[in-house]
Image (cartoon, rainbow, N blue to C red; front, top):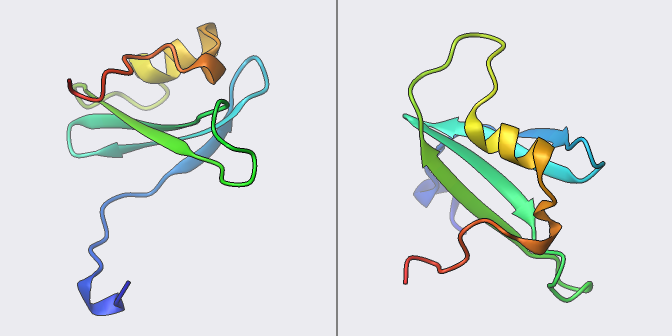
Length: 86
């Protein structure tokens, strides 16, 4: 990737779910974004899945619904809508 063609979009913050799973979260405009590791992927080639959800801007300290979902569900099975827009 040529540095001249790169466009900065957002920062991601590494977090750990209540069940001990690592994930990354951030914001992109009015969307909350989260990267979840696909546990079904080949262990030699880890795969991360990016999910986005439109949310209103939150007040400091509030959890967005994606973070709430991660902390209450087992995301290792990728139970979030997997239809890839199909």
